[in-house]
Amino acid sequence: KIIMGIESSCDETGVGLVRLHDDGTVELLADEVASSVELHARYGGVVPEVASRAHLEAMVPTTRRAFASAGLEMSDVDAIAVTAGPGLAGALLVGVSAAKAYAAALDVPLYGVNHLAGHIAVDTLQHGPLPTPCLALLVSGGHTQLLRVEDIAGKITEIGSTVDDAAGEAYDKVARVLDLPYPGGPPIDKAAKEGDPGAIAFPRGMTGPRDPKFDFSFSGLKTAVARWVEGAEARGEEIPVADVAASFQEAVADVLTAKAIRAATESGIGTLVISGGVAANSRLSALAKERCEEAGIELRVPRPRLCTDNGAMIAALGAHVVAAGCAPSPLTISANPALPVSTVCL
Ligand code: ATP
Ligand code: MG
Ligand code: FE
Image 1: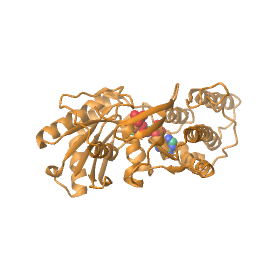
Image 2: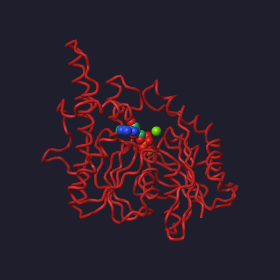
Image 3: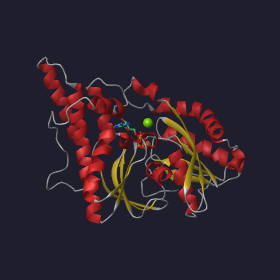
């Protein structure tokens, strides 16, 4: 079976194609992404109206590219999955409308699915079926959550989440303080490679003895970095960008991995999947690898291209939902900007 996946929750228009084999494995056939990130760069964040318009312009060309690169015709499609939420309302609507139109025109079932579950499901394209249960650390621009995945097609429960900023948001805000471009993850990752992660002792939020064990907080860290930089500037010192980036990145990776491994160990779960845009971070995956080996936990991190938003992740989740025999969504579904991660398919 061929499953088409459409993603438009934020600033990436993604169309992916996968093949669901009879044994339940899912094979990646095409993964085309058009990003409007440059249009938002000068605002330092995604401008919803600009993103919606860009999706509208990119949807059909991106779809054509996906079919061309897979060597498939639209008539080969057996089911269509689309991100129904969470995300920006106007942006989501473009993908949902396109998916409904394609599903009606091709007379194939439509599945409105969860973007966050898609970030986890994408790992199966690279590493095969997920062992169950597994623990997922979802770290993206809008979310930072620890999730227990009982079944990627149906049962996902939240163990902990950020009480303020998402990890990716902290990266983007710290990049701004350091005069690095938006989005901040990649330039901080790069700058940190030349810096000393022990240069500045930035706070590890929510790690006190009375703090919730599996929740996160990154807003204090972001403020600490801003204060440190302001202090150095006030003294007329040159900002050691590489050291600040490395020290900030170390604080983020330290807290994320420590809590994820503690959650896995305490719940007796043997596999940790790290996904979402921030999973593309080199230090996070290196530290996770080190600590998972120590703790005897199997670590799975999709390659960076699959970690950031794309259509293949939605196609992959769609394939798992189809394989599980879930009922298709009615053509009357709408986007849900606040769709909770516990709702995998509408
Ligand atoms: P959500 O999935 O929560 O709706 P989103 O879709 O906008 O949010 P993603 O595309 O999954 O988020 O991730 C984008 C985030 O990932 C940005 O904040 C970006 O800075 C961050 N990011 C990307 N690459 C890296 C990296 N190498 N290191 C750290 N952060 C990174
Ligand atoms: Mg993005
Ligand atoms: Fe995302």
